[in-house]
Amino acid sequence: MSVSAEGLPGTAAPGDPSPPPGPVVVGRYDQPPGYGVSRPRGARSWLFTWTTGGQGWLRQGAAEVRAGVGDLVVLAPGVRQAYTVAHGAAHWQFWWVHCRPRTTWTQWLRPYAVGDGMHAVTPVPAGLHDRVEEAFRRMSADARLPGTGEPPDAGTSADDRVAMARSTAARELALCALEEVVLLTATGARRPEPQPGVDPRVRRAQELMAADPGAPHTVRSLAESVALSPSRFAHLFTRQLGQSPMRALREARLWHAARLLEDTDLSVERVAAAAGFVSPFHFSRVFRERHGMPPGAYRALHGGELSEA
Image (cartoon, rainbow, N blue to C red; front, top):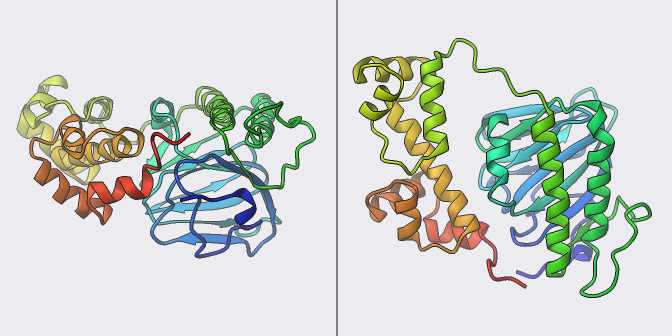
């Protein structure tokens, strides 16, 4: 699908589709109370927001966050989302980027996951704000880079204009600037406190699943890794997290499979195997149950053109 920056609205409105997942689209808004966007089917691309003034409220599935100055909030595609000026705030000024992220970023963002594909990287130390802001300005300028010639000056570009990276160079430069934003904020922000009341052994099992969801984990192997009997481990895990270890593992595998469909050209069968599913038919069935569409349709919607120039 071909979309130009000029074809996008100056301000997104409820019901507007998000940009496609392939290009990098960046803009800066300063919105008054009453501004809001709702996407019942979720976005087609990842959305990154960095608040520079006022406050915003973002919701993704059942997760929600109130974003203030210096907060980076990241929303994954395919999950119901809405965002608006926060109640009681005079305005919401923020940078936003729609794109398909580099695969390494998920590891940096993982500690800040708050559920349903939402990551809230906060609080970012004030000493980093200027550097992050400069990276966004550079991203906006680089996205306007033509196929040849020099990019516009980052200090004089129109920040409130939507910019879309049209060339390979523009897209890669914009992604480099966004990678700097993710790395600066994810390594500079205070890591969230562990879930209160969750046994360290349960947290350790969660970390093992997240680190390698495609591994042949079982209740017995996870229990042995945290020095518990299988029955004691399964009971403790289910009581504290509200779902069984195998249900949590299936969710981790489906999340991993979705990222592989977005970021690689692996066949559905190889994605299923890499994500830990023995049967591609079982994988397709549970993936459809989780995402509302089969793996091939999900890739067509969210994967973009992997060979795009």
